[in-house]
Image 1 (cartoon, rainbow, N blue to C red):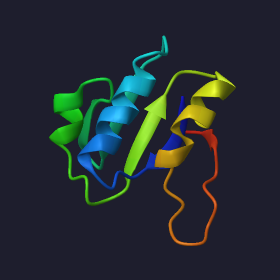
Image 2: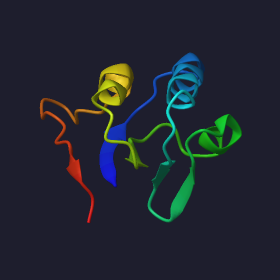
Image 3: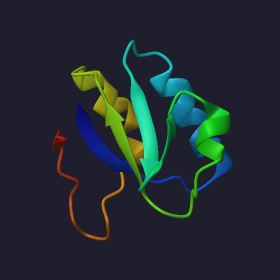
Length: 87
């Protein structure tokens, strides 16, 4: 599984994000701590605390995916996000 952090600033960004990942044949989990939802479920995503960065775990190795979700990647201030495999 790959893992990145994402952050949304408004409702439109959540809708755009869900529309993008629905195009991929992969499994996506989104959450923080013990609360994890199917990231392809817009209702599930809205059930999360969207004021904080969220962890996105996904099973795709498609490089196009990262390009498409790049506007939502959380960089934590000045630090660049590290794309890697979750343990």
